[in-house]
Amino acid sequence: MSDTQNSVAGPSIRPLHRWVSIAFTATVVANFIVRAKGAPPAWMTYPLLLLPLAALLLTDLYLFVLPYEVGRRYRGAP
Image (cartoon, rainbow, N blue to C red; front, side, top):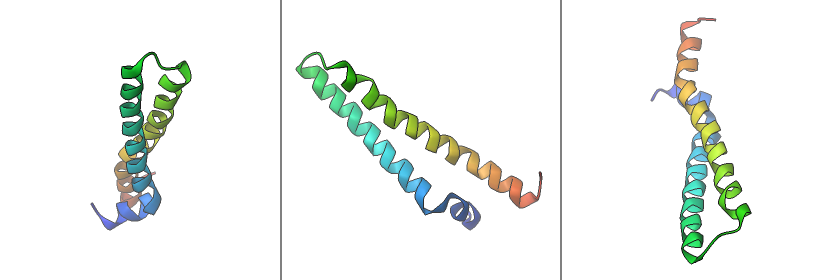
């Protein structure tokens, strides 16, 4: 990975993406544990899983588009 990509991504997006993925994994594990004990409340099943998943999607899309945007800026294309 080039220095240009690291400087554009900044020091906050990649670690944020890592921590959000850890949070999502933890909520999935917690969901399985709660489901093993019985029927979980509705607020614990979907919102707790979908919030980190939505944040993971947004950061992932940003990191996916980043190399293309950096290449376009580097070449000077509009």
